[in-house]
Image (tube, rainbow, N blue to C red; front, side, top):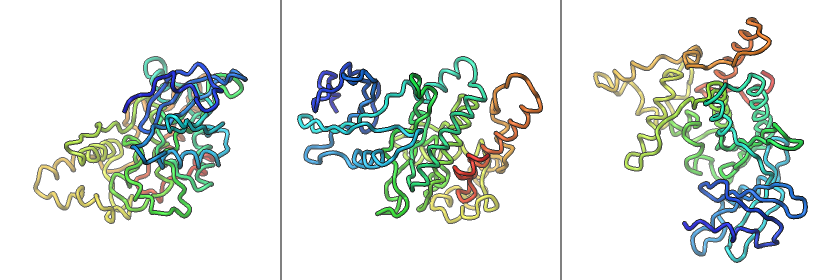
Amino acid sequence: MHRPAESKTQDAENNRYESMVLVGEGTYGYVYKAKEKVTQKRVAIKKFKPTKEGEGISLTAYREIMLLREIDHENVIKVRDVTINPEERTLSLIMDYAEFDLSEIIRFHHNTTPPTVYSIKSCLWQVLNAMHYLHCNWICHRDLKPSNILVMADGPEQGVVKIADFGLARVFQSPLRPLYENGVVVTIWYRAPELLFGSKHYTKSVDVWAIGCIFAELLTTNPLFPGKEKDTKNPNLFQDVQIEKLFQVLGKPNVEVWPDINSLPDWKYKNPQKWKGTLLEKKWNQYPNVHPENLRKIPNLGLPEQRPSDSRTEARCDAQAFDLLSRMLEYDPTRRITTAEALDH
């Protein structure tokens, strides 16, 4: 699809914005940095890509607008306005501009020094605070990842974390269709095991799993389960490699830790009973059995050194961090910690 020229994105609806600069592109649209002419306040303009001829504005755009217009929370990105460009037949969201996203911050610390324990706690608490608000209002985000978590750098909101990109978010109180009928959700590295095993039912706990993956990434500055990119020639490999990443880190699950696992559609392909006497059985036996202590084997997974130094405080905080992380990364979604419980941890 042809990328719109920056001159054409100059808010043809009301000419309220200036200094338009393209800063990002996603599946559904383009994101620009701009200034309000009157206030000189910086804003972000998310311009949705037009759909095929005759189809109008995408359902994804409608859903995101509907949810964001109803949400009002300090840790969720705020929509200031919605505009329509009749010439381009496009729709735009005008939102607060955030200087950074969490993936940029993690990358920075990967190449320098680890983030401080205070930064990690603050970031994690704000993410949980936002998600608790959303879950209490029957909203499941379904695409939490570092690039969708924004961090304000200027003004009175400096240091405030905001959840963004609600293109895959859904209301789950009484959905018109089962959630699984919406297709694949959550970027693969942050996808919960029940989704990987093809569960026909899932809950807001998929968001908690993703937060656990982000928490581990803050601690190590590396993704916890970095599976391979999708192979169009063998789409099943995409899921299989990601499942193996989980097994390598957490160990292989069983009915003791996940009683419902035998009912999952794709578990039968991983069931070792089918592999007796094959190379696949040998590979299965190479994975460790599931155990919370498996997480401690991950390089650099622990809270950064605190100052002033107090070994007893560090040990206690470290143990608490591992406990919280292990409860977020429970295989069984019914045993996974909730956002409310995590906030009180």
